[in-house]
Amino acid sequence: MKQEEIKDKLLSKFGSDMILASVDFRGQISVTVLREKILEICRYLKEDPDLAFNFLSFVAGVDWYPKTPRFEVVYQIQSLKHNHRFRVKAMLEESGDNLASIDSVVPLWPTANWHERETAEMFGITFNNHPDPRKLLLPDGWTVHPLRKDFSLYGTKEDTPDLPA
Amino acid sequence: MSQAMGQPANYRSEILELNLGPHHPSTHGVFRAVVELDGEMVVNVVSHLGYLHRGYEKTCENKHYHQVIPLAERCDYMGASSNSLVYCMAVEKLLDVEVPERAQVVRVMMAELSRIFSHLFWMGTHGHDVGAMTPLFYMLREREEIMNLFELTAGGRLMPNYLRIGGLIRDLEEGFVDKLRSFTEHFDRRVDEYETLLTKNPIYVDRTQGIGILPLEDAIAMGATGPLVRGSGLAWDIRKQEPYCGYEQYDFDVPVENGCDVYSRYLVRIAEMRQSNRILRQTLDRLPGGPIRAEKPGVIFPPQEDIYTKMESLIHHFMLVIEGLKPPVGEIYQCIESPRGELGCYIVSDGGPRPYRLKWRAPAFVNLESLANMSRGYFFADLIAILSSVDIVLAEVDR
Image 1: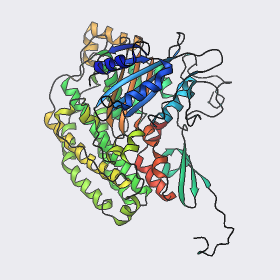
Image 2 (image 1 turned 90 degrees about the horizontal axis):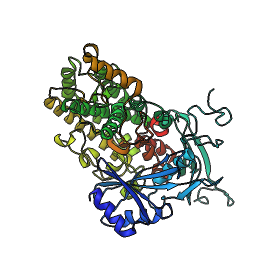
Image 3 (image 1 turned 90 degrees about the vertical axis):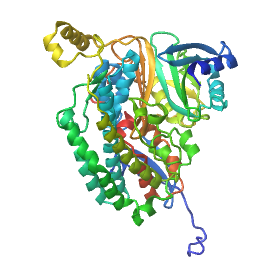
């Protein structure tokens, strides 16, 4: 299926209330969807026989600081059956002390487990109902999120005490 | 059972947690796993990563586009050219730059050499892990030849750092083509030699056949790619599915095995080395003349000799070094078939001279996720064989 057709299929199924935006860049389309509906939309993408996105390449975060909504979670998916790829995104926002949150897609693609753990610790995003919400790459004691844009490249003595000065 | 063995009636069993690594020869770096054992049987494996985490993605976001290339090669130092290839291709796609034919063919050469390079070292250390000491010495002999080839044309032995955005840094060194041809002529016989050491060796077969079963549906669900998924019966190779660098013009097969076990992954990698050699021979026959870098002033570095003779080229070079190249706003995902599987690079550009966000889809990282899945129910000693069959490079796992 062509990227354009996948986008149209999503739009006709969910409507513009849930499919918020789409960008076409050099033949790769990314679609921004409603954060609350991510699991539902991903389930459709995986289970619809014409789409059959049975393979998740990665989950990544993007920090658009100081814009709002601040975070973006990116899902790069692929169908091994039809040999097509697609990209789905959702925008997230923090409110006060509460971290931004989105539903985990581990029930659909178990490989998301480590990708989401990494995104969670690097950006400070909570993945709801994640089966194993521990840190993955960073030391357990760290409270900072290094891939955020307001985190300095070198860290600070207080935040990252285990780094060499 | 316990009664028959003469155990007392109040015989008690419990799960033992054993720490493996981070400093252990079989972990190929600094990987730590807490293994839950019932007797000698593996009940679960909990991986602890991050001992080699260097903040690769964060560092890249603070470098100019050109400065990322050497960093990328240090991610997976076993298949260094594959890494720079995927990164350069991603940036070229952002910039919409067409790479000249000669550079494409040389890139395929470098990528396939690095695949053989990586598989050779894997096979040597894998043999070592299951108790076969000899193969490593044979593998290192051919690996040395490849390193000499890299050194001849690029200067670097382990990390050639030879690819550039838009093409290559310089043309092939004189004598490279002849040396590569003589390598491809004898390499198939060398692979036969490796096979006599392991393929029908009863000790090796006993240690690997039926061990570390990863059914195909689990492999797909866990995102496994490369020899892992091909050893589980799916002929999935990005070089065939979404050809890049002109791979559609080469004649080669995708080796598949249906055993889903460690032995199948071994057979797949052996066959892949032969196929890579086949591709290498075709690159030598095909190698066209012409430029080795795309021409796009202000975006791609001008040829070295022009910098000394032409004013405009000097200015472009200066501006590229000082200000960096500025791709348009957009985002790109580019992936290739690295020795370990789907190696992907996702770049978000905000129009500035540095990647706004760079996500590295490291195949070893994702493949390692299936470790617990593959090792449950096998002996602890098998865990070493299974871990080694994943072919991890810790620098790439932790980034």
